[in-house]
Every structure is written in structure tokens, then in C-alpha cells.
Length: 301
Image (cartoon, rainbow, N blue to C red):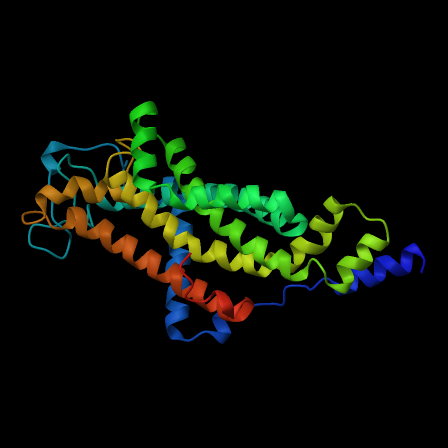
């Protein structure tokens, strides 16, 4: 068999992701979830241009103004103001930007590291598999909050700390999944044919293993968006996440907990934003799991 025939045979064995039409195939709940996510992404990307006020600037004269639908509310501050007179809506928009940045950076970093570790362990096996999987077990056993508190005590609260902590939490899930998927296909005929044709292990991993496990990677990444949002909000709530005065949703909930009886909107509004966003992400993620890899639906990632 010549090189051209071999390349053609190999390329034909690599599956392609089929087109996923969630909007038309999903029900009304999925469509609402997609609309919520579209709004979330839109305000996160264009927040500085659509924000009605400066999220960091306040006025004590406008302190604790209630939402517009409550007595004493004003259309100037639709969701009210906080204890420093800062607009809640503007801070929600700025917080969405922070959440989106954390999601993208943490998932990309964790995905790259975890996939590399898992595919190498699953493809080569032996001592490489044993050593790398023990690292995965170590990552899974380390307490998240303890790690965040440790980094916060050493370096202080920072955006970088959140990325580090969340990436250390998530990469092991990619490693376990990619290892299992790689072990299933490493002895398939098209992989043996690639070895026979003289392709290097690196090229086989990149061109033939990775495309076969890509659907599972996409599903895991989608399902973990909600996990990242909750983790970022939890760390910021505890004071080891995004440092003030940056308007993280978690820190907004923490600032409003002392006013839960007198100014309920301070913590309820960002709390509802977290709830709607995470529910929407999980619903869309489950729909993708049904289409791409049903075995991952409902898995505790």
C-alpha cells in the first residue's frame, strides 16, 4: 500500500463531529436556557458599553435604594443599589465578565493539561500510566477550599489564584476521561495501520486519538462551565477569590448577607443570576451529552 492510500484510509477512519442543532431538537426549556446563556455572554463581552453606571463608583446619597418594582425604587437603579450606593445591575454585568473570563481560562488550561496527561497514560500504559494516574488521584483527594485558603494566605486574593485553584480541580476529570477513551481505541485497526505506516506516536495521538475523543471533551467542558461559575462564586464569597472592589457575583452575595432582612436584593439578585446561569448551562450541557456522548449524561464531573 502506498503512502497516499494509507493516508486516505487513515483519514477515513477518523470520525467527524456531526452538526448539533440544539435549538431545533431541544424543547422549550432548552431554548430558554440558550437565551439565558446568550444574554450572559452578550453582557459579559459588551459590559463596559452597555452598563448604565460605573460598577465601582457609588454615592452615599443613593445608598440602599430598592429595586424599581419596590416602594422607593427608581428606574435609575433598576435592581437597586448596595450599601455604598453602587448600582447592582452594573455590578452584575461586570461580574458576568469576570465569570466568563474565569470559565474560559480555567477550562482551557485544565482541558489541555488533563487531556495531555490522560492520552499519554492511556496510549503508552505501563509505568507512565501508573505514575500519571497517581498524580490524578492526588489531585482528586486535595481539598479545594484548603488549597484556595493556602494560596490566599501566601499570595493574597487574586484573579490568578482562582484560575490556579479551579484548573487544579478540573484537570483530573479530563485526564480520567481521556485515558479511558484512549485505552478503548489504541488497539483499533486504524491505529495499528498508522503505526505500520511509520507515523510517530505524537502524530498518532494528535491526528487519530484526539479527534476520536473530542466529543467527550466537548461534553465535559460544557458541563463544567456551571461548576466553574459556582466555584468562582464560592471562593469569592469566602474572600479568597477576586479581590475587592471587583464585582464578583460571589462577593456581592457576601456583601449583602448582613442586610438580608433589610435589603434583600443585595444578595438575592446576584444569587438568582448564579442560579439561572448554572441551571441553563447544565441543561444545555445535558442536551449536548445526549447528542454527542450519552454515557456522560448525569455523570458527577
